[in-house]
Length: 161
Image 1 (cartoon, rainbow, N blue to C red):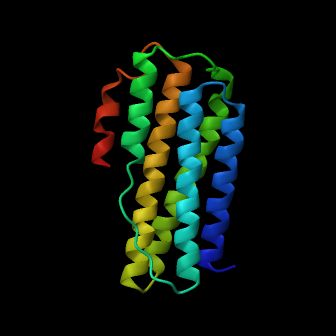
Image 2 (image 1 turned 180 degrees about the vertical axis):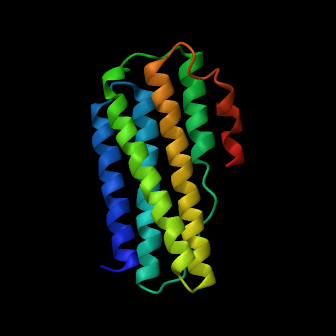
């Protein structure tokens, strides 16, 4: 299996995991964030499919962090913590581990590829995976401590990544 096929499989598995997780969540805001993460994995899949097919690829900056933050802020304003279960923390941690492994894989492959554009794309996708990891961290905070989840000062530094 070549790099792109493996990456496509990883992204498809990630999409499926997020979509499955979204069906298990009773909170609308969390469901929206998980669906956003699944959709982001589809974008990554399509990037690697184009690379495999030798098509031109342009990877832009996403607004997934700011979009997730907006959802969290809306949930806070509306005091929407229904449908939140700390029993799902391990599922979010598993997703975080998947994102960590994906990021590490893309960073490793970026060092191995010869083409400059391939390297840039792999680094961009690795950066996206880091953003996903951070969003999952905020979900874990929210689920485990809903009364203080947004006040964490680290949330406001996520845009730097």
